[in-house]
Picture 1 (spheres, rainbow, N blue to C red):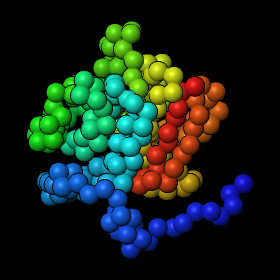
Picture 2: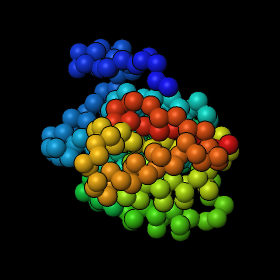
Picture 3: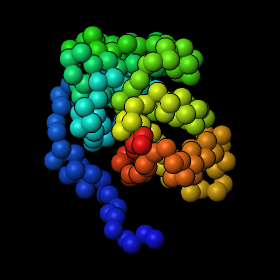
Picture 4: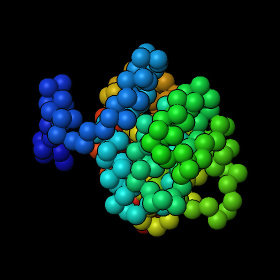
Length: 219
Protein backbone atom coordinates (compact mmCIF):
# COMPACT_ATOMS: atom_id res chain seq x y z
CA UNK A 1 0.00 0.00 0.00
CA UNK A 2 1.16 3.54 -0.70
CA UNK A 3 2.17 5.33 2.48
CA UNK A 4 2.34 8.89 1.21
CA UNK A 5 6.13 9.07 1.08
CA UNK A 6 6.34 11.02 -2.15
CA UNK A 7 6.72 14.65 -3.10
CA UNK A 8 4.83 16.59 -5.74
CA UNK A 9 7.34 18.63 -7.71
CA UNK A 10 6.50 22.25 -8.35
CA UNK A 11 8.31 24.09 -11.17
CA UNK A 12 10.35 25.90 -8.53
CA UNK A 13 11.34 22.68 -6.80
CA UNK A 14 12.24 21.09 -10.13
CA UNK A 15 14.48 24.06 -10.96
CA UNK A 16 16.13 23.62 -7.55
CA UNK A 17 16.69 19.94 -8.34
CA UNK A 18 18.33 20.77 -11.67
CA UNK A 19 20.50 23.46 -10.10
CA UNK A 20 21.88 20.92 -7.64
CA UNK A 21 22.75 18.27 -10.20
CA UNK A 22 25.62 18.00 -12.67
CA UNK A 23 25.76 20.85 -15.19
CA UNK A 24 26.82 20.08 -18.75
CA UNK A 25 27.35 22.81 -21.33
CA UNK A 26 27.37 20.48 -24.35
CA UNK A 27 24.09 18.80 -23.42
CA UNK A 28 22.55 22.20 -22.69
CA UNK A 29 23.61 23.38 -26.15
CA UNK A 30 22.09 20.29 -27.74
CA UNK A 31 18.85 20.76 -25.79
CA UNK A 32 18.66 24.42 -26.88
CA UNK A 33 19.24 23.57 -30.55
CA UNK A 34 16.67 20.79 -30.41
CA UNK A 35 14.10 23.14 -28.88
CA UNK A 36 14.76 25.93 -31.39
CA UNK A 37 14.68 23.65 -34.45
CA UNK A 38 12.03 21.13 -33.45
CA UNK A 39 9.44 23.19 -31.61
CA UNK A 40 6.93 21.03 -29.76
CA UNK A 41 8.57 17.80 -30.93
CA UNK A 42 11.51 18.69 -28.66
CA UNK A 43 9.51 17.32 -25.73
CA UNK A 44 10.69 13.90 -26.93
CA UNK A 45 14.14 14.69 -25.56
CA UNK A 46 14.90 13.27 -22.12
CA UNK A 47 15.32 15.59 -19.15
CA UNK A 48 18.75 16.56 -17.75
CA UNK A 49 18.23 14.69 -14.49
CA UNK A 50 17.18 11.58 -16.35
CA UNK A 51 20.28 11.77 -18.53
CA UNK A 52 22.61 12.06 -15.55
CA UNK A 53 20.75 9.23 -13.80
CA UNK A 54 21.28 6.99 -16.84
CA UNK A 55 24.99 7.83 -16.98
CA UNK A 56 25.42 6.96 -13.32
CA UNK A 57 23.51 3.67 -13.67
CA UNK A 58 25.41 2.53 -16.76
CA UNK A 59 28.74 3.43 -15.16
CA UNK A 60 27.80 1.78 -11.84
CA UNK A 61 27.16 -1.61 -13.47
CA UNK A 62 30.33 -1.39 -15.55
CA UNK A 63 28.43 -1.44 -18.83
CA UNK A 64 30.56 -2.03 -21.91
CA UNK A 65 27.96 -2.73 -24.58
CA UNK A 66 24.69 -0.82 -24.76
CA UNK A 67 21.73 -0.39 -27.08
CA UNK A 68 19.26 2.47 -27.46
CA UNK A 69 15.95 2.33 -29.29
CA UNK A 70 14.88 5.84 -30.24
CA UNK A 71 17.79 8.27 -30.56
CA UNK A 72 16.11 11.52 -31.68
CA UNK A 73 18.81 14.25 -31.59
CA UNK A 74 21.28 12.26 -29.54
CA UNK A 75 20.99 13.53 -25.96
CA UNK A 76 20.40 10.16 -24.32
CA UNK A 77 23.05 8.51 -26.49
CA UNK A 78 25.66 10.94 -25.18
CA UNK A 79 24.60 10.18 -21.61
CA UNK A 80 24.97 6.44 -22.19
CA UNK A 81 28.14 6.52 -24.29
CA UNK A 82 29.96 8.67 -21.73
CA UNK A 83 29.46 5.90 -19.16
CA UNK A 84 31.12 3.27 -21.35
CA UNK A 85 34.86 2.49 -21.29
CA UNK A 86 37.07 3.61 -24.22
CA UNK A 87 36.43 0.35 -26.06
CA UNK A 88 32.71 0.32 -25.22
CA UNK A 89 29.98 0.28 -27.86
CA UNK A 90 26.53 1.81 -28.16
CA UNK A 91 24.12 0.70 -30.88
CA UNK A 92 21.57 3.44 -31.65
CA UNK A 93 18.39 2.53 -33.51
CA UNK A 94 16.24 5.19 -35.17
CA UNK A 95 14.43 5.83 -38.45
CA UNK A 96 14.98 9.59 -38.89
CA UNK A 97 18.01 10.73 -40.87
CA UNK A 98 17.05 14.34 -40.15
CA UNK A 99 16.97 14.06 -36.37
CA UNK A 100 20.00 11.81 -36.10
CA UNK A 101 22.07 14.16 -38.29
CA UNK A 102 21.95 16.57 -35.34
CA UNK A 103 22.87 13.70 -33.03
CA UNK A 104 25.93 12.80 -35.06
CA UNK A 105 27.25 16.37 -34.94
CA UNK A 106 27.01 16.41 -31.18
CA UNK A 107 28.52 12.94 -30.82
CA UNK A 108 31.51 14.27 -32.73
CA UNK A 109 31.69 17.34 -30.47
CA UNK A 110 31.57 15.10 -27.43
CA UNK A 111 34.34 12.85 -28.76
CA UNK A 112 32.04 9.83 -28.69
CA UNK A 113 31.52 9.01 -32.37
CA UNK A 114 33.87 6.04 -32.32
CA UNK A 115 31.79 4.35 -29.62
CA UNK A 116 28.45 4.77 -31.38
CA UNK A 117 26.96 2.84 -34.30
CA UNK A 118 23.76 4.28 -35.77
CA UNK A 119 21.31 2.04 -37.61
CA UNK A 120 18.56 3.79 -39.57
CA UNK A 121 15.91 1.09 -39.80
CA UNK A 122 12.97 -0.21 -37.78
CA UNK A 123 14.45 -1.18 -34.42
CA UNK A 124 12.98 -4.69 -34.38
CA UNK A 125 14.58 -5.42 -37.75
CA UNK A 126 17.93 -4.21 -36.44
CA UNK A 127 17.71 -6.27 -33.25
CA UNK A 128 16.59 -9.44 -35.02
CA UNK A 129 19.42 -9.15 -37.55
CA UNK A 130 22.12 -9.08 -34.85
CA UNK A 131 24.39 -12.11 -34.41
CA UNK A 132 23.09 -14.62 -31.89
CA UNK A 133 26.06 -13.96 -29.59
CA UNK A 134 25.50 -10.17 -29.43
CA UNK A 135 25.03 -9.41 -25.71
CA UNK A 136 24.23 -6.08 -24.04
CA UNK A 137 24.83 -4.80 -20.52
CA UNK A 138 22.52 -1.80 -20.69
CA UNK A 139 19.51 -0.86 -22.81
CA UNK A 140 17.27 2.18 -23.15
CA UNK A 141 13.85 1.88 -24.80
CA UNK A 142 12.32 5.16 -25.99
CA UNK A 143 10.88 4.40 -29.42
CA UNK A 144 7.43 3.53 -30.83
CA UNK A 145 5.23 2.80 -27.82
CA UNK A 146 3.15 0.23 -29.68
CA UNK A 147 6.22 -2.01 -29.95
CA UNK A 148 7.40 -1.62 -26.34
CA UNK A 149 6.67 -5.25 -25.38
CA UNK A 150 8.39 -6.57 -28.50
CA UNK A 151 11.42 -4.36 -27.90
CA UNK A 152 11.60 -5.56 -24.31
CA UNK A 153 11.43 -9.24 -25.24
CA UNK A 154 14.05 -8.91 -27.99
CA UNK A 155 16.48 -7.08 -25.74
CA UNK A 156 15.96 -9.21 -22.65
CA UNK A 157 17.14 -12.35 -24.40
CA UNK A 158 20.32 -10.48 -25.41
CA UNK A 159 20.91 -8.97 -21.95
CA UNK A 160 23.55 -10.39 -19.62
CA UNK A 161 22.59 -11.36 -16.06
CA UNK A 162 22.49 -8.23 -13.87
CA UNK A 163 22.16 -6.10 -16.99
CA UNK A 164 19.63 -3.27 -17.02
CA UNK A 165 16.79 -2.27 -19.33
CA UNK A 166 15.43 1.26 -18.87
CA UNK A 167 12.00 1.98 -20.36
CA UNK A 168 10.93 5.59 -20.86
CA UNK A 169 7.52 7.34 -20.74
CA UNK A 170 5.89 4.69 -18.59
CA UNK A 171 3.63 7.28 -16.91
CA UNK A 172 2.68 8.78 -20.29
CA UNK A 173 1.96 12.26 -18.90
CA UNK A 174 -0.43 10.63 -16.44
CA UNK A 175 -2.56 9.15 -19.21
CA UNK A 176 -1.99 5.61 -17.96
CA UNK A 177 -4.65 6.46 -15.35
CA UNK A 178 -7.12 8.03 -17.75
CA UNK A 179 -9.75 5.41 -18.63
CA UNK A 180 -10.99 7.55 -21.52
CA UNK A 181 -7.62 7.31 -23.25
CA UNK A 182 -7.69 4.09 -25.21
CA UNK A 183 -5.20 5.03 -27.90
CA UNK A 184 -2.97 2.19 -29.16
CA UNK A 185 0.14 3.76 -27.62
CA UNK A 186 -1.53 4.22 -24.24
CA UNK A 187 -2.84 0.67 -24.20
CA UNK A 188 0.61 -0.67 -25.14
CA UNK A 189 2.28 1.20 -22.29
CA UNK A 190 -0.36 0.05 -19.80
CA UNK A 191 0.01 -3.54 -20.98
CA UNK A 192 3.78 -3.54 -20.47
CA UNK A 193 3.48 -1.76 -17.13
CA UNK A 194 1.01 -4.42 -15.97
CA UNK A 195 3.15 -7.29 -17.24
CA UNK A 196 6.58 -6.36 -15.89
CA UNK A 197 5.96 -6.83 -12.13
CA UNK A 198 4.92 -10.44 -12.84
CA UNK A 199 7.91 -11.26 -15.08
CA UNK A 200 10.03 -13.63 -12.98
CA UNK A 201 13.07 -13.04 -15.19
CA UNK A 202 13.63 -9.54 -13.83
CA UNK A 203 13.52 -7.26 -10.81
CA UNK A 204 11.48 -4.14 -11.57
CA UNK A 205 11.05 -0.64 -10.20
CA UNK A 206 9.08 2.23 -11.72
CA UNK A 207 10.37 5.68 -10.81
CA UNK A 208 8.73 9.11 -11.20
CA UNK A 209 11.67 10.64 -13.05
CA UNK A 210 10.57 12.94 -15.89
CA UNK A 211 7.69 11.09 -17.65
CA UNK A 212 8.30 7.91 -15.66
CA UNK A 213 11.05 5.38 -16.15
CA UNK A 214 11.02 1.67 -15.37
CA UNK A 215 14.26 -0.15 -14.56
CA UNK A 216 14.45 -3.91 -15.13
CA UNK A 217 17.39 -5.95 -13.83
CA UNK A 218 17.83 -9.33 -15.44
CA UNK A 219 18.23 -12.05 -12.82
